[in-house]
Image (cartoon, rainbow, N blue to C red; front, side, top):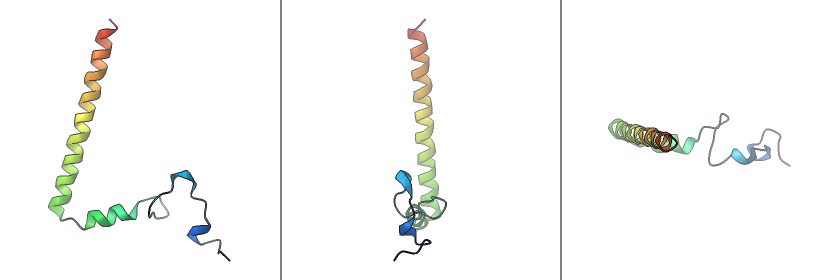
Length: 71
């Protein structure tokens, strides 16, 4: 018989995946990140930052081009 406190008895809904804590944090990603050196973490973070800025710039240019076409 399953205990009401057993994680397997809880309905996590469609948003549950992987190994998560009670706040929905993916613990496997944290463990993988902790295997990296601080410099490797910084480099990964910087790469993610640069990619996000590239996407923002792409979106800005796309909106500007769309506005020009409708004038």
